[in-house]
Every structure is written in structure tokens, then in C-alpha cells.
Length: 149
Length: 149
Image (cartoon, rainbow over all chains, first blue to last red; front, side, top):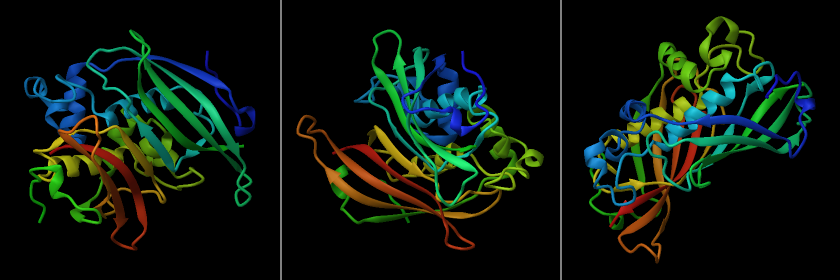
């Protein structure tokens, strides 16, 4: 059960958060990709069959990122303290196919207090999405959050 | 004028591409963020006035990323050769406000031939979005593309 942080100072390195499970249906995958990542293996199930690395429709990595952030930012954890962020390093070790369920977890990697801005702290979070059926990681994001103190 | 690559082997390190200019209107910023990054400074112009770091509505960084990839992947450059990708490291050095125009350019940072997959090459591209009004960088993405040979 994730509750709302009231301050950056409530976080500790190594702390973990469970954001539950997600999946992306084919129609949402295609809708997202038509606008933001128009490649045949994201937009066209027939053409995707011939994609050498995938052999079928897969989610745009940007869409998977967005779905994860929708869950993270739509929940209470950072609601009262998030001031923004300035970097996310994302990798997609394996493709995500329509309706595949993955579990999203977060871990506090590092906490820093910038001298120039005493009113905030910078939390580096590692988010990992793991396909429930076989434990394969489908997305990993290391990102910085500026959080109110 | 960007034309379609027919093979990874047509790229050279240091090569540059001009993807033109983009901007995000407020209604699209709010629509994207409600689904994929629901934070008040992306979804609510009134609440955004009180955001300490922004003082007004700004685009979700994921949205800016998506708009850039929509432009890159919607154009001819990689259309015939893109097989996917597995990593993007993105930073947002400055916020992007509604209707601010930024210029998107790409540069070939590195080219690699994986021994295990002779049918493809891996191009590392650096994409930079620069606000036209003042030359400030609003997004930088370093990403890998798997490209057909």
C-alpha cells in the first residue's frame, strides 16, 4: 500500500515501492504509436508479422514508459511533493506484446540535497517492469525526481 | 531534405539530420499528461501557476519525447530500415511551454556491427531539441536504433 509522501526527507535509499501490474491492449498500442512512434511493428498487426526482431505487434517503448508514469504519477506517492524531473534513462531489454501483464516496481537509488536549492531534494529512482508470466524485464527506467522537502 | 536510408551502411559517424521545428499546444499537453503523466503543472494551467520550478503549464517530458519520435519515425529516414531499439537516455535541461517552437536535429554518434546479428547494425543517435527563440536546449535524447543492412 503506497501512501503519499509529505516530504523528500521521508525517503530512504533502498526503499522499494510496488505499483501493481499493467498491460497494454492492441488498440491502445496502435493508437499511441500512430501519433508518437509510427512504425509498422507498433501500428499494423499484419505488417508486424514480418518484423525481423518481433514477428508481431509490440508496444512502442515510449508508450510503455508513459503507461508506467501514468501509474506512478497517478498514484499518491509523489502527488504532494513532485516538482518535476530532468532525466530518464530507459532501456527495453525485451519487447512487450499486447495484453502481456507486467509488474511495476520502484526503488530509491540515490538521494541528494542540492546546495543551491534548499527547498528540494533530488531522488534517483529505478523503475523496473517485469513480465509476470516469465519474469523477463520489459522496461527499466532510471529517473530523477525533484521533490519538495 | 531527408531521404530514406536503404541500409545502415549508408550512415556515417558525425552525420547530421534536420527534422524541422515542432511545438505543442496547451490542449495537447494537457491531453497527453492526463493519461501518461498526470501532474498539475502538465494538466491544469491554474494549478501550474503555483508550481515552484515552472510557474505555469509545461509539457510532460514524455510528451516532448513522443512528439520528437513522431516526427523522426513519421519521416522517411528510418522508414525502410528500422528494426527497433532498446535504449534512450533523455534529459530535459529546460521546460517546454505551450506553443514554444523548438528545432529538432539528429547526429550519428556511433555505429556498431554486432557479431551475433550480421543482418543489422546499431546506430547511436543524439537528438537535440533547441528552442528557436533563445537557443536553449529543451530536450536531448541519446538512443540506439537497430537498422537493417
